[in-house]
Image (cartoon, rainbow, N blue to C red; front, side, top):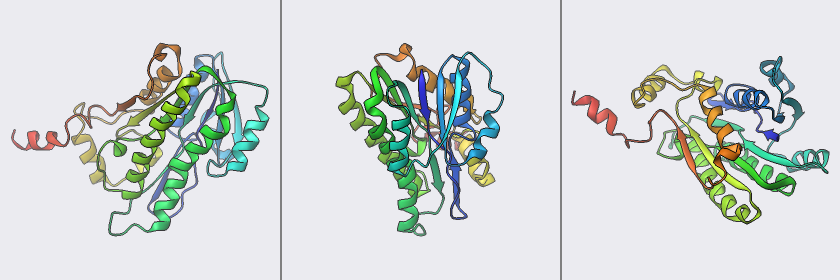
Length: 259
């Protein structure tokens, strides 16, 4: 299996945080896929992301390419490098967050987050879809913020938009035998969540019925399932990996208050 995975992006404004292939979920996904014999093309904005992926062992192979997901020309260059080969999977894992609230966020911040989290995924699908074979799988990494109303308005809006892209791609690519699904992590221990305020962390875990944060490996396990033939008739699914955080619609805090 050959899999281009989404990149990490450099942080911008002080309240913007980053995630992607170089840290946390992206590296966990790459590691798990290599362990299961996949040939993984890991792409990222900075070569420094390789540090966490050095020493990978397994029957598969990791190949690194530097790429900015917001630049169509760089996607085109990657597709040209892979020309003549076939792809069996794509994980759109690139993502940044911006934590300003409704009254504070600027249009520039909104556009920046959208450019990475949504347009980057669209460009990857557009430029690589011609290399997919029947039975291939695309996995878009969303967030529980895309399933409910979270306070970082730019990030939340982008993840809701990614759901729309996911469903349209499912409809458009399904006749070619290409499946498109999305995974929506809850509070996961990553470099991005480590930058959150203590109060946010405590509140997120309090709203999670399992009572803990998740791990990047737990997200990677679901990604592996969606890329594999075990999910051969799963298409257009939106799978929360959140310990039950989105299951209760905010009722948990009400229930806990009555104890």
